[in-house]
Image (cartoon, rainbow, N blue to C red):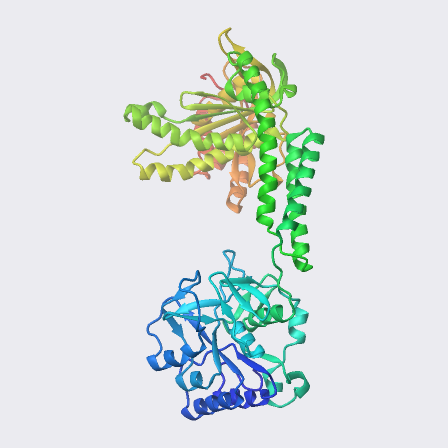
Length: 618
Protein backbone atom coordinates (compact mmCIF):
# COMPACT_ATOMS: atom_id res chain seq x y z
CA UNK A 1 0.00 0.00 0.00
CA UNK A 2 2.84 2.40 0.81
CA UNK A 3 4.37 1.69 -2.58
CA UNK A 4 1.33 1.41 -4.87
CA UNK A 5 -1.55 3.00 -2.90
CA UNK A 6 -4.93 1.56 -1.99
CA UNK A 7 -6.42 -1.45 -3.79
CA UNK A 8 -7.26 -1.90 -6.67
CA UNK A 9 -3.96 -1.21 -8.38
CA UNK A 10 -3.26 -0.64 -12.03
CA UNK A 11 -3.15 -3.93 -13.93
CA UNK A 12 0.20 -2.79 -15.30
CA UNK A 13 1.59 -3.12 -11.74
CA UNK A 14 0.09 -6.59 -11.27
CA UNK A 15 1.48 -7.72 -14.63
CA UNK A 16 4.97 -6.50 -13.71
CA UNK A 17 4.77 -8.44 -10.44
CA UNK A 18 3.49 -11.61 -12.10
CA UNK A 19 6.49 -11.60 -14.44
CA UNK A 20 8.64 -12.42 -11.40
CA UNK A 21 6.69 -15.69 -10.84
CA UNK A 22 7.79 -17.55 -13.97
CA UNK A 23 9.89 -19.91 -11.81
CA UNK A 24 6.85 -20.94 -9.78
CA UNK A 25 5.18 -24.18 -10.79
CA UNK A 26 1.63 -22.87 -10.35
CA UNK A 27 0.32 -19.36 -9.70
CA UNK A 28 -3.21 -19.03 -8.28
CA UNK A 29 -4.96 -15.66 -8.53
CA UNK A 30 -7.44 -15.07 -5.69
CA UNK A 31 -8.84 -11.99 -7.39
CA UNK A 32 -11.24 -11.26 -10.24
CA UNK A 33 -10.67 -8.71 -12.99
CA UNK A 34 -14.34 -8.42 -13.92
CA UNK A 35 -14.31 -4.87 -15.30
CA UNK A 36 -12.28 -3.41 -18.14
CA UNK A 37 -9.85 -0.61 -17.27
CA UNK A 38 -7.18 1.06 -19.40
CA UNK A 39 -6.98 -1.11 -22.57
CA UNK A 40 -3.19 -1.16 -22.59
CA UNK A 41 -3.04 -2.29 -18.93
CA UNK A 42 -5.66 -4.97 -19.52
CA UNK A 43 -3.77 -6.24 -22.54
CA UNK A 44 -0.45 -6.23 -20.66
CA UNK A 45 -1.96 -8.30 -17.82
CA UNK A 46 -3.53 -10.80 -20.23
CA UNK A 47 -0.27 -11.15 -22.19
CA UNK A 48 1.75 -11.69 -18.99
CA UNK A 49 -0.62 -14.41 -17.78
CA UNK A 50 -0.51 -16.05 -21.19
CA UNK A 51 3.33 -16.01 -21.31
CA UNK A 52 3.64 -17.50 -17.83
CA UNK A 53 1.49 -20.48 -18.82
CA UNK A 54 1.09 -21.57 -15.19
CA UNK A 55 -1.68 -19.31 -13.92
CA UNK A 56 -4.99 -20.50 -12.47
CA UNK A 57 -7.47 -17.63 -12.34
CA UNK A 58 -10.36 -17.27 -9.98
CA UNK A 59 -14.01 -16.39 -10.46
CA UNK A 60 -17.09 -16.21 -8.27
CA UNK A 61 -20.36 -18.12 -8.47
CA UNK A 62 -23.34 -15.90 -7.67
CA UNK A 63 -26.91 -16.68 -6.66
CA UNK A 64 -28.09 -13.39 -8.12
CA UNK A 65 -26.67 -10.75 -10.43
CA UNK A 66 -27.77 -8.20 -13.00
CA UNK A 67 -26.25 -10.11 -15.90
CA UNK A 68 -24.11 -13.09 -16.83
CA UNK A 69 -20.88 -13.12 -18.84
CA UNK A 70 -21.10 -13.24 -22.61
CA UNK A 71 -21.46 -16.58 -24.36
CA UNK A 72 -17.91 -16.22 -25.65
CA UNK A 73 -16.50 -15.90 -22.12
CA UNK A 74 -18.65 -18.79 -20.83
CA UNK A 75 -17.42 -20.92 -23.74
CA UNK A 76 -13.78 -20.21 -22.79
CA UNK A 77 -14.56 -20.77 -19.11
CA UNK A 78 -16.10 -24.18 -19.81
CA UNK A 79 -12.65 -25.48 -20.78
CA UNK A 80 -11.84 -25.43 -17.04
CA UNK A 81 -14.82 -27.65 -16.09
CA UNK A 82 -14.60 -31.37 -15.42
CA UNK A 83 -15.39 -33.27 -18.60
CA UNK A 84 -16.60 -36.63 -17.30
CA UNK A 85 -18.97 -36.37 -14.35
CA UNK A 86 -21.99 -38.42 -13.22
CA UNK A 87 -25.46 -37.21 -14.12
CA UNK A 88 -26.59 -36.06 -10.67
CA UNK A 89 -24.34 -34.53 -8.05
CA UNK A 90 -25.37 -33.16 -4.67
CA UNK A 91 -23.40 -29.92 -4.98
CA UNK A 92 -24.38 -26.22 -5.18
CA UNK A 93 -25.85 -24.96 -8.44
CA UNK A 94 -25.59 -21.30 -9.47
CA UNK A 95 -27.35 -19.20 -12.10
CA UNK A 96 -24.76 -16.46 -12.36
CA UNK A 97 -21.00 -16.05 -12.36
CA UNK A 98 -18.64 -13.10 -11.90
CA UNK A 99 -15.69 -13.84 -14.15
CA UNK A 100 -12.61 -12.13 -15.52
CA UNK A 101 -12.78 -10.00 -18.64
CA UNK A 102 -12.49 -12.03 -21.85
CA UNK A 103 -8.78 -11.34 -22.59
CA UNK A 104 -7.78 -12.44 -19.09
CA UNK A 105 -10.06 -15.50 -19.12
CA UNK A 106 -8.57 -16.62 -22.43
CA UNK A 107 -5.02 -16.19 -21.07
CA UNK A 108 -5.55 -18.28 -17.93
CA UNK A 109 -4.49 -21.90 -18.17
CA UNK A 110 -7.41 -22.88 -15.89
CA UNK A 111 -10.07 -21.09 -13.86
CA UNK A 112 -11.47 -22.13 -10.48
CA UNK A 113 -14.18 -20.89 -8.15
CA UNK A 114 -13.31 -18.64 -5.20
CA UNK A 115 -16.46 -19.15 -3.10
CA UNK A 116 -16.02 -20.03 0.56
CA UNK A 117 -19.13 -19.95 2.78
CA UNK A 118 -19.37 -19.60 6.57
CA UNK A 119 -21.12 -22.08 8.84
CA UNK A 120 -24.26 -21.07 10.75
CA UNK A 121 -22.18 -19.30 13.41
CA UNK A 122 -20.46 -17.14 10.81
CA UNK A 123 -17.11 -18.99 10.93
CA UNK A 124 -15.56 -20.49 7.79
CA UNK A 125 -14.39 -24.04 8.46
CA UNK A 126 -15.08 -25.86 5.19
CA UNK A 127 -13.77 -25.54 1.65
CA UNK A 128 -16.29 -26.21 -1.15
CA UNK A 129 -14.80 -28.29 -3.93
CA UNK A 130 -17.32 -28.38 -6.77
CA UNK A 131 -20.20 -26.27 -8.06
CA UNK A 132 -22.40 -26.21 -11.15
CA UNK A 133 -22.87 -23.35 -13.59
CA UNK A 134 -24.67 -23.60 -16.92
CA UNK A 135 -24.63 -27.40 -16.66
CA UNK A 136 -20.85 -27.64 -16.20
CA UNK A 137 -19.10 -28.78 -13.01
CA UNK A 138 -16.34 -26.37 -11.96
CA UNK A 139 -13.62 -27.14 -9.38
CA UNK A 140 -12.57 -24.72 -6.70
CA UNK A 141 -9.41 -22.69 -7.18
CA UNK A 142 -7.42 -24.97 -4.87
CA UNK A 143 -8.54 -28.10 -6.71
CA UNK A 144 -7.62 -26.58 -10.08
CA UNK A 145 -4.20 -25.70 -8.70
CA UNK A 146 -3.64 -29.33 -7.69
CA UNK A 147 -4.77 -30.59 -11.12
CA UNK A 148 -2.16 -28.36 -12.74
CA UNK A 149 0.50 -29.06 -10.11
CA UNK A 150 0.29 -32.86 -10.57
CA UNK A 151 -0.49 -32.67 -14.28
CA UNK A 152 -3.27 -35.21 -13.83
CA UNK A 153 -7.00 -34.99 -14.09
CA UNK A 154 -9.17 -36.07 -11.16
CA UNK A 155 -12.04 -38.56 -11.33
CA UNK A 156 -15.43 -37.45 -10.04
CA UNK A 157 -18.09 -39.92 -8.87
CA UNK A 158 -21.45 -39.32 -7.21
CA UNK A 159 -19.82 -39.24 -3.76
CA UNK A 160 -16.08 -38.69 -4.08
CA UNK A 161 -13.30 -37.00 -5.98
CA UNK A 162 -10.35 -39.33 -6.57
CA UNK A 163 -7.15 -37.29 -6.80
CA UNK A 164 -3.63 -38.81 -7.01
CA UNK A 165 -4.33 -41.49 -4.42
CA UNK A 166 -6.58 -39.41 -2.19
CA UNK A 167 -10.35 -39.56 -1.81
CA UNK A 168 -12.21 -36.32 -1.15
CA UNK A 169 -15.95 -35.75 -0.71
CA UNK A 170 -17.53 -34.02 -3.69
CA UNK A 171 -19.18 -31.20 -1.73
CA UNK A 172 -16.65 -29.82 0.78
CA UNK A 173 -13.79 -30.71 3.10
CA UNK A 174 -13.10 -29.60 6.66
CA UNK A 175 -10.02 -27.40 6.66
CA UNK A 176 -7.29 -28.11 9.19
CA UNK A 177 -5.98 -24.62 9.93
CA UNK A 178 -2.40 -23.83 10.87
CA UNK A 179 -1.08 -21.26 13.30
CA UNK A 180 -0.93 -17.63 12.24
CA UNK A 181 2.85 -17.88 12.54
CA UNK A 182 2.86 -20.67 9.94
CA UNK A 183 0.79 -18.57 7.57
CA UNK A 184 2.73 -15.35 7.85
CA UNK A 185 6.12 -17.09 7.69
CA UNK A 186 5.10 -18.12 4.16
CA UNK A 187 3.63 -14.75 3.21
CA UNK A 188 5.50 -12.16 1.16
CA UNK A 189 4.74 -8.59 0.22
CA UNK A 190 3.85 -7.94 -3.41
CA UNK A 191 6.14 -4.91 -3.21
CA UNK A 192 9.10 -7.24 -2.54
CA UNK A 193 8.03 -9.45 -5.43
CA UNK A 194 7.73 -6.42 -7.70
CA UNK A 195 11.20 -5.18 -6.70
CA UNK A 196 12.77 -8.64 -7.11
CA UNK A 197 13.68 -8.92 -3.45
CA UNK A 198 12.27 -12.45 -3.04
CA UNK A 199 14.97 -15.06 -3.73
CA UNK A 200 14.25 -17.28 -6.71
CA UNK A 201 14.78 -20.32 -4.47
CA UNK A 202 11.73 -19.29 -2.50
CA UNK A 203 9.56 -19.44 -5.61
CA UNK A 204 11.07 -22.12 -7.84
CA UNK A 205 8.77 -25.10 -8.24
CA UNK A 206 6.32 -23.76 -5.69
CA UNK A 207 2.61 -23.05 -5.67
CA UNK A 208 2.08 -19.32 -5.22
CA UNK A 209 -1.31 -17.93 -4.16
CA UNK A 210 -1.63 -14.24 -4.99
CA UNK A 211 -4.34 -12.29 -3.18
CA UNK A 212 -5.28 -9.29 -1.09
CA UNK A 213 -4.62 -8.94 2.65
CA UNK A 214 -5.43 -5.27 3.16
CA UNK A 215 -7.79 -4.84 6.14
CA UNK A 216 -9.88 -2.29 4.26
CA UNK A 217 -10.82 -4.83 1.58
CA UNK A 218 -13.73 -7.23 2.15
CA UNK A 219 -11.55 -10.30 1.56
CA UNK A 220 -10.77 -10.64 5.28
CA UNK A 221 -12.83 -13.52 6.65
CA UNK A 222 -13.44 -15.25 10.01
CA UNK A 223 -11.80 -18.61 10.59
CA UNK A 224 -11.61 -20.72 13.78
CA UNK A 225 -8.17 -19.24 14.53
CA UNK A 226 -8.71 -15.55 13.64
CA UNK A 227 -9.82 -13.23 10.86
CA UNK A 228 -7.52 -14.09 8.00
CA UNK A 229 -7.16 -12.97 4.36
CA UNK A 230 -9.23 -14.94 1.86
CA UNK A 231 -6.19 -16.36 0.01
CA UNK A 232 -5.24 -18.28 3.14
CA UNK A 233 -8.32 -20.51 2.82
CA UNK A 234 -7.11 -21.68 -0.59
CA UNK A 235 -3.58 -21.97 0.81
CA UNK A 236 -4.90 -24.11 3.71
CA UNK A 237 -6.73 -26.51 1.40
CA UNK A 238 -3.74 -26.92 -0.90
CA UNK A 239 -1.35 -27.42 2.02
CA UNK A 240 -3.73 -29.88 3.73
CA UNK A 241 -3.79 -31.90 0.51
CA UNK A 242 -0.05 -31.86 -0.13
CA UNK A 243 0.95 -32.60 3.46
CA UNK A 244 -1.84 -35.08 4.28
CA UNK A 245 -3.09 -32.74 6.97
CA UNK A 246 -6.78 -33.42 6.44
CA UNK A 247 -8.39 -34.83 9.57
CA UNK A 248 -11.04 -37.41 8.71
CA UNK A 249 -13.51 -39.33 10.90
CA UNK A 250 -12.77 -42.78 12.35
CA UNK A 251 -15.74 -44.92 13.39
CA UNK A 252 -13.68 -47.28 15.56
CA UNK A 253 -12.30 -44.37 17.59
CA UNK A 254 -15.82 -42.99 17.97
CA UNK A 255 -17.01 -46.32 19.42
CA UNK A 256 -14.14 -46.31 21.93
CA UNK A 257 -15.04 -42.73 22.81
CA UNK A 258 -18.65 -43.77 23.47
CA UNK A 259 -17.64 -46.79 25.54
CA UNK A 260 -15.38 -44.71 27.80
CA UNK A 261 -18.11 -42.09 28.23
CA UNK A 262 -20.70 -44.77 29.06
CA UNK A 263 -18.47 -46.28 31.76
CA UNK A 264 -18.09 -42.88 33.42
CA UNK A 265 -21.85 -42.30 33.28
CA UNK A 266 -22.44 -45.54 35.21
CA UNK A 267 -19.81 -44.57 37.79
CA UNK A 268 -21.36 -41.11 38.24
CA UNK A 269 -24.90 -42.49 38.52
CA UNK A 270 -24.11 -44.93 41.29
CA UNK A 271 -21.67 -42.80 43.30
CA UNK A 272 -23.37 -39.36 43.37
CA UNK A 273 -26.75 -39.34 45.10
CA UNK A 274 -27.67 -35.66 44.74
CA UNK A 275 -29.36 -35.09 41.38
CA UNK A 276 -27.99 -31.54 41.05
CA UNK A 277 -24.41 -32.61 41.68
CA UNK A 278 -24.96 -35.54 39.35
CA UNK A 279 -26.20 -33.32 36.53
CA UNK A 280 -23.28 -30.95 37.11
CA UNK A 281 -20.89 -33.90 36.87
CA UNK A 282 -22.57 -35.05 33.66
CA UNK A 283 -22.04 -31.57 32.22
CA UNK A 284 -18.38 -31.66 33.25
CA UNK A 285 -18.04 -35.10 31.63
CA UNK A 286 -19.53 -33.81 28.38
CA UNK A 287 -17.21 -30.81 28.52
CA UNK A 288 -14.18 -33.08 29.02
CA UNK A 289 -15.22 -35.31 26.10
CA UNK A 290 -15.70 -32.23 23.93
CA UNK A 291 -12.27 -30.95 24.94
CA UNK A 292 -10.71 -34.33 24.13
CA UNK A 293 -12.38 -34.17 20.73
CA UNK A 294 -10.81 -30.78 20.12
CA UNK A 295 -7.42 -32.07 21.25
CA UNK A 296 -7.68 -35.09 18.92
CA UNK A 297 -8.58 -32.77 16.06
CA UNK A 298 -5.90 -30.16 16.75
CA UNK A 299 -3.32 -32.91 17.22
CA UNK A 300 -4.43 -34.34 13.84
CA UNK A 301 -5.10 -37.75 15.39
CA UNK A 302 -8.58 -37.93 13.89
CA UNK A 303 -11.73 -35.87 13.50
CA UNK A 304 -14.21 -37.24 16.05
CA UNK A 305 -17.90 -37.20 15.33
CA UNK A 306 -18.40 -35.37 18.58
CA UNK A 307 -22.10 -34.84 17.91
CA UNK A 308 -22.81 -38.57 17.79
CA UNK A 309 -20.53 -39.24 20.76
CA UNK A 310 -22.24 -36.63 22.92
CA UNK A 311 -25.68 -37.68 21.67
CA UNK A 312 -24.99 -41.26 22.74
CA UNK A 313 -23.77 -40.13 26.15
CA UNK A 314 -26.79 -37.86 26.64
CA UNK A 315 -29.23 -40.60 25.60
CA UNK A 316 -27.52 -43.03 27.95
CA UNK A 317 -27.73 -40.48 30.76
CA UNK A 318 -31.37 -39.82 29.91
CA UNK A 319 -32.27 -43.53 30.05
CA UNK A 320 -30.62 -43.94 33.46
CA UNK A 321 -32.15 -40.77 34.87
CA UNK A 322 -35.62 -41.49 33.46
CA UNK A 323 -35.62 -44.80 35.29
CA UNK A 324 -34.50 -43.02 38.45
CA UNK A 325 -37.11 -40.27 38.05
CA UNK A 326 -39.85 -42.83 37.47
CA UNK A 327 -38.93 -44.44 40.76
CA UNK A 328 -38.95 -41.10 42.55
CA UNK A 329 -42.28 -40.19 40.94
CA UNK A 330 -43.88 -43.24 42.46
CA UNK A 331 -42.62 -42.09 45.84
CA UNK A 332 -43.91 -38.56 45.17
CA UNK A 333 -47.35 -39.85 44.24
CA UNK A 334 -47.43 -41.73 47.52
CA UNK A 335 -46.62 -38.54 49.45
CA UNK A 336 -49.19 -36.62 47.44
CA UNK A 337 -51.92 -39.14 48.17
CA UNK A 338 -51.16 -38.72 51.87
CA UNK A 339 -50.92 -34.91 52.02
CA UNK A 340 -52.97 -33.60 49.07
CA UNK A 341 -55.87 -32.57 51.33
CA UNK A 342 -53.54 -31.23 53.98
CA UNK A 343 -51.37 -28.63 52.26
CA UNK A 344 -51.65 -26.21 49.34
CA UNK A 345 -50.22 -27.28 45.95
CA UNK A 346 -47.22 -24.93 46.24
CA UNK A 347 -46.32 -26.22 49.67
CA UNK A 348 -46.90 -29.78 48.53
CA UNK A 349 -44.19 -29.33 45.87
CA UNK A 350 -41.74 -28.16 48.52
CA UNK A 351 -42.68 -31.10 50.72
CA UNK A 352 -42.07 -33.52 47.86
CA UNK A 353 -38.73 -32.00 46.88
CA UNK A 354 -37.37 -31.03 50.31
CA UNK A 355 -39.43 -32.65 53.07
CA UNK A 356 -36.57 -32.25 55.52
CA UNK A 357 -36.70 -28.44 55.30
CA UNK A 358 -40.38 -27.97 56.12
CA UNK A 359 -42.11 -27.98 59.47
CA UNK A 360 -45.70 -29.08 58.96
CA UNK A 361 -46.83 -27.58 62.28
CA UNK A 362 -47.02 -23.87 63.14
CA UNK A 363 -43.93 -21.92 64.15
CA UNK A 364 -42.99 -18.37 65.05
CA UNK A 365 -40.39 -16.76 62.81
CA UNK A 366 -39.40 -13.39 61.44
CA UNK A 367 -40.98 -12.70 58.09
CA UNK A 368 -41.50 -9.79 55.72
CA UNK A 369 -45.09 -9.29 54.57
CA UNK A 370 -46.26 -7.42 51.47
CA UNK A 371 -49.80 -6.39 50.61
CA UNK A 372 -50.65 -4.92 47.20
CA UNK A 373 -54.12 -3.64 46.38
CA UNK A 374 -55.60 -2.21 43.16
CA UNK A 375 -56.95 1.29 43.78
CA UNK A 376 -60.60 2.02 42.85
CA UNK A 377 -61.24 -1.54 41.78
CA UNK A 378 -64.90 -1.40 42.73
CA UNK A 379 -65.50 1.48 40.32
CA UNK A 380 -63.50 -0.27 37.61
CA UNK A 381 -65.45 -3.52 38.05
CA UNK A 382 -68.79 -1.73 37.72
CA UNK A 383 -67.80 -0.45 34.27
CA UNK A 384 -66.48 -3.70 32.80
CA UNK A 385 -68.08 -6.90 31.59
CA UNK A 386 -67.14 -9.98 33.67
CA UNK A 387 -64.91 -11.39 30.93
CA UNK A 388 -63.06 -8.10 30.55
CA UNK A 389 -62.73 -7.76 34.31
CA UNK A 390 -61.09 -11.19 34.56
CA UNK A 391 -58.78 -10.33 31.65
CA UNK A 392 -57.80 -7.08 33.38
CA UNK A 393 -57.05 -8.86 36.67
CA UNK A 394 -54.96 -11.52 34.96
CA UNK A 395 -53.03 -8.90 32.99
CA UNK A 396 -52.15 -7.08 36.22
CA UNK A 397 -51.69 -9.88 38.74
CA UNK A 398 -49.57 -12.19 36.55
CA UNK A 399 -46.51 -9.92 36.13
CA UNK A 400 -46.80 -8.68 39.73
CA UNK A 401 -46.78 -12.27 40.95
CA UNK A 402 -43.78 -13.02 38.73
CA UNK A 403 -41.87 -10.24 40.49
CA UNK A 404 -42.65 -11.74 43.90
CA UNK A 405 -41.52 -15.21 42.84
CA UNK A 406 -38.42 -13.83 41.10
CA UNK A 407 -37.35 -12.22 44.37
CA UNK A 408 -37.73 -15.45 46.39
CA UNK A 409 -41.12 -14.53 47.83
CA UNK A 410 -44.00 -16.86 48.63
CA UNK A 411 -47.36 -15.95 47.19
CA UNK A 412 -49.63 -16.38 50.21
CA UNK A 413 -52.95 -15.68 48.57
CA UNK A 414 -55.02 -13.50 46.28
CA UNK A 415 -57.67 -11.55 48.13
CA UNK A 416 -59.97 -10.37 45.37
CA UNK A 417 -57.96 -7.65 43.67
CA UNK A 418 -55.22 -7.75 46.32
CA UNK A 419 -52.06 -9.82 46.74
CA UNK A 420 -50.49 -11.05 49.98
CA UNK A 421 -46.93 -12.33 49.86
CA UNK A 422 -44.41 -13.31 52.52
CA UNK A 423 -40.65 -13.76 52.63
CA UNK A 424 -38.53 -16.04 54.82
CA UNK A 425 -41.25 -18.70 55.12
CA UNK A 426 -41.65 -21.58 54.74
CA UNK A 427 -37.94 -21.62 53.84
CA UNK A 428 -35.21 -19.24 54.99
CA UNK A 429 -34.46 -16.42 52.53
CA UNK A 430 -31.27 -14.41 52.91
CA UNK A 431 -31.91 -10.67 52.72
CA UNK A 432 -35.66 -11.21 52.82
CA UNK A 433 -36.43 -7.62 53.93
CA UNK A 434 -34.54 -6.09 51.01
CA UNK A 435 -36.18 -8.53 48.59
CA UNK A 436 -39.63 -7.64 49.88
CA UNK A 437 -39.01 -3.90 49.49
CA UNK A 438 -37.37 -4.42 46.08
CA UNK A 439 -40.42 -6.44 44.98
CA UNK A 440 -42.76 -3.64 46.02
CA UNK A 441 -40.66 -1.09 44.12
CA UNK A 442 -40.52 -3.28 41.00
CA UNK A 443 -44.28 -3.88 41.17
CA UNK A 444 -44.96 -0.15 41.12
CA UNK A 445 -42.54 0.33 38.20
CA UNK A 446 -44.03 -2.63 36.33
CA UNK A 447 -47.52 -1.19 36.65
CA UNK A 448 -46.32 1.98 34.91
CA UNK A 449 -45.38 -0.22 31.93
CA UNK A 450 -48.60 -2.23 32.17
CA UNK A 451 -50.74 0.89 31.94
CA UNK A 452 -49.36 1.46 28.43
CA UNK A 453 -50.50 -2.04 27.48
CA UNK A 454 -53.86 -1.57 29.16
CA UNK A 455 -54.42 1.66 27.25
CA UNK A 456 -53.87 -0.15 23.93
CA UNK A 457 -56.51 -2.71 25.01
CA UNK A 458 -58.97 0.08 25.94
CA UNK A 459 -58.72 -0.67 29.65
CA UNK A 460 -58.62 2.11 32.24
CA UNK A 461 -55.32 3.05 33.87
CA UNK A 462 -54.75 1.28 37.17
CA UNK A 463 -52.92 2.27 40.34
CA UNK A 464 -51.84 0.08 43.23
CA UNK A 465 -50.89 0.61 46.81
CA UNK A 466 -48.15 -1.48 48.40
CA UNK A 467 -47.58 -1.94 52.11
CA UNK A 468 -44.62 -3.76 53.67
CA UNK A 469 -43.81 -4.74 57.25
CA UNK A 470 -41.30 -7.03 58.96
CA UNK A 471 -41.53 -8.82 62.27
CA UNK A 472 -42.39 -12.07 63.99
CA UNK A 473 -45.51 -13.93 62.95
CA UNK A 474 -47.05 -17.37 63.26
CA UNK A 475 -46.62 -19.32 60.06
CA UNK A 476 -47.90 -22.78 59.31
CA UNK A 477 -50.80 -24.82 57.99
CA UNK A 478 -54.11 -23.23 58.85
CA UNK A 479 -57.63 -24.04 57.77
CA UNK A 480 -60.11 -26.84 58.27
CA UNK A 481 -59.90 -30.60 58.41
CA UNK A 482 -60.78 -30.66 54.72
CA UNK A 483 -58.26 -28.14 53.52
CA UNK A 484 -55.15 -26.47 54.93
CA UNK A 485 -53.20 -23.54 53.56
CA UNK A 486 -49.74 -22.42 54.51
CA UNK A 487 -50.10 -18.82 55.65
CA UNK A 488 -49.04 -16.26 58.25
CA UNK A 489 -51.05 -14.53 61.00
CA UNK A 490 -50.28 -11.99 63.70
CA UNK A 491 -49.75 -8.29 64.32
CA UNK A 492 -46.95 -8.16 61.75
CA UNK A 493 -49.38 -9.23 59.04
CA UNK A 494 -52.13 -6.89 60.23
CA UNK A 495 -49.79 -3.89 60.35
CA UNK A 496 -48.60 -4.59 56.77
CA UNK A 497 -52.22 -4.52 55.63
CA UNK A 498 -52.90 -1.25 57.50
CA UNK A 499 -49.75 0.35 56.06
CA UNK A 500 -50.91 -0.56 52.56
CA UNK A 501 -54.14 1.33 53.23
CA UNK A 502 -52.23 4.45 54.32
CA UNK A 503 -51.18 5.01 50.70
CA UNK A 504 -54.67 6.45 50.15
CA UNK A 505 -54.07 9.12 52.80
CA UNK A 506 -50.60 10.18 51.69
CA UNK A 507 -51.12 9.79 47.95
CA UNK A 508 -48.23 7.33 47.70
CA UNK A 509 -47.96 4.01 45.88
CA UNK A 510 -45.66 2.22 48.32
CA UNK A 511 -45.09 2.47 52.08
CA UNK A 512 -43.03 0.38 54.46
CA UNK A 513 -42.63 0.40 58.22
CA UNK A 514 -39.50 1.30 60.14
CA UNK A 515 -39.32 -2.40 61.05
CA UNK A 516 -38.47 -3.13 57.41
CA UNK A 517 -36.59 0.00 56.34
CA UNK A 518 -34.22 -0.12 59.28
CA UNK A 519 -32.85 -3.50 58.16
CA UNK A 520 -31.96 -2.54 54.59
CA UNK A 521 -28.82 -0.95 53.15
CA UNK A 522 -30.03 1.14 50.22
CA UNK A 523 -26.57 1.92 48.80
CA UNK A 524 -26.85 -0.82 46.16
CA UNK A 525 -30.50 -0.16 45.31
CA UNK A 526 -31.76 2.29 42.67
CA UNK A 527 -33.88 4.13 45.24
CA UNK A 528 -33.70 5.47 48.80
CA UNK A 529 -36.16 5.69 51.67
CA UNK A 530 -37.94 8.83 52.85
CA UNK A 531 -39.68 8.96 56.23
CA UNK A 532 -43.24 10.18 55.64
CA UNK A 533 -44.80 10.25 59.07
CA UNK A 534 -45.16 8.59 62.46
CA UNK A 535 -48.60 6.99 62.81
CA UNK A 536 -50.61 4.87 65.20
CA UNK A 537 -52.97 2.67 63.21
CA UNK A 538 -56.46 1.93 64.47
CA UNK A 539 -56.46 -0.42 67.43
CA UNK A 540 -52.79 0.26 68.26
CA UNK A 541 -51.31 2.80 70.63
CA UNK A 542 -47.69 2.20 69.74
CA UNK A 543 -46.69 4.45 66.84
CA UNK A 544 -44.69 3.29 63.85
CA UNK A 545 -42.74 5.37 61.40
CA UNK A 546 -43.63 4.84 57.77
CA UNK A 547 -41.44 5.39 54.72
CA UNK A 548 -41.89 5.70 50.99
CA UNK A 549 -39.18 5.33 48.35
CA UNK A 550 -37.82 7.72 45.73
CA UNK A 551 -35.70 6.88 42.70
CA UNK A 552 -32.20 8.24 43.18
CA UNK A 553 -31.76 11.59 41.46
CA UNK A 554 -30.73 15.14 42.22
CA UNK A 555 -34.37 16.26 42.32
CA UNK A 556 -35.31 13.39 44.66
CA UNK A 557 -32.50 14.39 47.04
CA UNK A 558 -33.90 17.93 47.03
CA UNK A 559 -37.37 16.62 47.85
CA UNK A 560 -35.98 14.52 50.69
CA UNK A 561 -34.09 17.46 52.17
CA UNK A 562 -37.12 19.77 52.11
CA UNK A 563 -39.61 17.16 53.29
CA UNK A 564 -37.44 15.99 56.20
CA UNK A 565 -37.07 19.63 57.27
CA UNK A 566 -40.85 19.98 57.20
CA UNK A 567 -41.36 16.80 59.24
CA UNK A 568 -38.84 18.03 61.82
CA UNK A 569 -40.72 21.34 62.23
CA UNK A 570 -44.03 19.50 62.30
CA UNK A 571 -42.89 17.26 65.17
CA UNK A 572 -41.59 20.28 67.07
CA UNK A 573 -45.13 21.77 66.91
CA UNK A 574 -43.96 24.53 64.59
CA UNK A 575 -46.97 24.06 62.31
CA UNK A 576 -46.84 27.43 60.57
CA UNK A 577 -43.18 27.00 59.61
CA UNK A 578 -43.82 23.37 58.62
CA UNK A 579 -46.74 24.50 56.45
CA UNK A 580 -44.47 26.93 54.65
CA UNK A 581 -41.93 24.17 53.96
CA UNK A 582 -44.49 21.56 52.87
CA UNK A 583 -46.25 24.06 50.63
CA UNK A 584 -43.06 24.43 48.57
CA UNK A 585 -43.47 20.78 47.46
CA UNK A 586 -46.72 21.24 45.56
CA UNK A 587 -46.26 18.18 43.33
CA UNK A 588 -45.29 15.78 46.12
CA UNK A 589 -48.50 14.23 47.46
CA UNK A 590 -47.28 13.42 51.00
CA UNK A 591 -46.34 17.12 51.37
CA UNK A 592 -49.83 18.10 50.20
CA UNK A 593 -51.34 15.88 52.91
CA UNK A 594 -49.00 17.28 55.55
CA UNK A 595 -49.85 20.85 54.45
CA UNK A 596 -53.54 20.07 54.88
CA UNK A 597 -52.89 18.62 58.32
CA UNK A 598 -50.79 21.62 59.41
CA UNK A 599 -53.67 23.95 58.51
CA UNK A 600 -56.05 21.91 60.69
CA UNK A 601 -53.60 21.86 63.58
CA UNK A 602 -53.13 25.63 63.33
CA UNK A 603 -56.88 26.09 63.64
CA UNK A 604 -57.19 23.48 66.42
CA UNK A 605 -53.88 23.28 68.29
CA UNK A 606 -53.53 19.94 70.11
CA UNK A 607 -53.12 19.91 73.88
CA UNK A 608 -50.74 17.00 74.04
CA UNK A 609 -48.47 16.74 71.03
CA UNK A 610 -45.97 13.97 70.37
CA UNK A 611 -45.81 14.21 66.59
CA UNK A 612 -47.82 11.01 66.08
CA UNK A 613 -50.83 10.95 63.79
CA UNK A 614 -53.57 8.56 64.94
CA UNK A 615 -55.40 6.74 62.17
CA UNK A 616 -59.07 6.23 63.03
CA UNK A 617 -60.01 4.08 60.04
CA UNK A 618 -58.68 0.78 58.72
